[in-house]
Image (tube, rainbow, N blue to C red; front, side):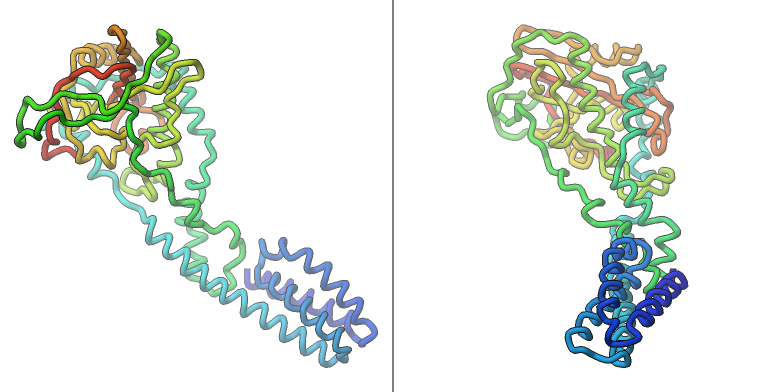
Length: 398
């Protein structure tokens, strides 16, 4: 890049020098500089040093024309403008090198193995060997996989650029490696502003005093606000559309970061349902009152995480859990046999349990097979009924 910049600068400088051979030709020099100035965006892409040179030479030319300077003074001014242009590019490069190095340190490669250690711990959690069932993904799941593969993620591109060999060479190079600076990773591309708790439509609150640690009978669920009235009877397709929206948000490609294997992951963000979750289908089905995550591998028996917010793995690590109720247990048995969404309509309450299966992209980190049943979402529409009490997480919950 430095050689390219020097050649381009020399050609530009020689052209201006010849045009401005006499005071009467300063007007032509101004015209030439203006033309070059409009080429600055292209110069900025390939060589900011040349872009700054063109800009500063234009300024020097205008000043010399206004002062009616002679050829000697003009030549000195354009040489000084060239030197100032390269100095500005060097300062910019140093600043950008520091910014990029800070981003490399902020989004380093890390191992996800400690988070996923439970997958191989079948002796401690014998239930995991029983609930892990595989099936061939049908067209509905393949559509999700295809959308993920076709999704353009500027965050992923930024992480790739941040950790590729070209950038590492740039960080270690002299200032003029600043070429292509418009493609350097930026903090606004890497950060996520939507990682905030999203309250459930229906929240939970204790009706009595908190139980002692480890107690089994404690307060049931109670409504903290009015639940949604369901005016239509949803069928399997409507429920699948709602569940599909939750799945696609929970495993959104934007959150994967850059994955080279479970031992090398940069910028990974925990799975969660955020504010943009499409829990409302393309029909009249309203958003569910509650969505809870069913865990199949982290405990001796399947458990349901309890939270007043939509499921977010970083928050659920320390969340209490409860046993599956009768509907959830029967629904889980159906999911193990290959179903993807099961439901029931109990008076004014509609319940649904949707499978969370391993997609192609999940295999980058999870030790599993495509189609494996990894968990489920438990949905509830209408009035909230009592269910088994939540208890504090066991020590092995992560």
